[in-house]
Image (cartoon, rainbow, N blue to C red; front, side, top):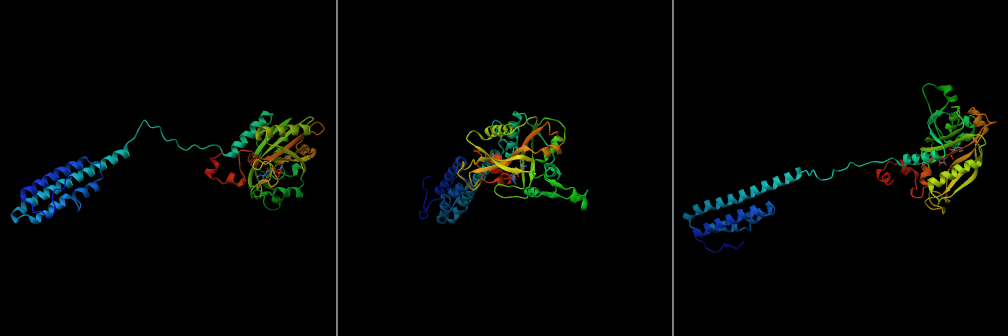
Length: 360
Ligand code: FA5
């Protein structure tokens, strides 16, 4: 806008009125069309450096007779500019409201976050599938059981030191307190081997079971959790050999871990298998070099062996006709050994951190 007047120049009444009316026209037009904010427009047109204030200050140089008329024009101009600013403000508010309410029905909808199965559930499904292909059927047995099934039925006499290895949680139950409680204990099953004799008690032979369940032990560190899962295989039939056992374990290792992983069998001792073995797999994190998880490059997956005749007898199986093998591995540890899992602390699996679980 052109500069109209300065404070010092004396000014005639008519000229001042003309200038004020021109200013009013310019201001109202500019405010209506401008895309600037109402605050900026207010500063431009009514602020302390505005032409309006300069013209208003020239009131000092007009005659007292003219003052009243010019004052009225001045007020009228100010009101017009303020009213234009108020309309602009109203329009701006309406535009903001209508943008907020605006709803584009053609836009694709926002999908709610979708979850997926927990990694342990995924692992159980995969393990079940591999053993199904070998003719093993998934069965379920109690996860809270009489201590007879995980211990005595498996050839571990009451208070036999072997049962200490399982660091068991015992349960007090109201039905059998005191002395009775001591005789018949209830445990959170420390291993899925409790399912062996329970399966034999069904009286259906041959047996090809895969029992996958929760297990509980008083342990927690980088490779132990107090609650974990095991999968237990049991095969009872005529003329079962170590060769069958080895074949089943190799089939599993090949299909679960892939061809780059190797297994090894070490002689071991379990009360319920004879001979007994410990099965190890090369560590998927360090590939056999040794790391903070495995220490020596190998990770213990679990035990296996030929079923002890006493266990078969405890399950009512005729040992002159039948024999068998069994194995029991940890689901979480087995999953951790997969080369693409990159898990170096078992506790992460149960930390319930959604950011961690989303990765699998
Ligand atoms: C047993 O529990 C035997 N019942 C296995 C067995 C079955 C042997 C049938 C012979 C015949 P062990 O205590 O080693 O064995 O445990 C087996 C596997 O369970 C371990 O190798 C490990 O993979 C897993 N495991 C044991 N304790 C824990 C734990 N606290 N947290 C996570 N995994 C565990």
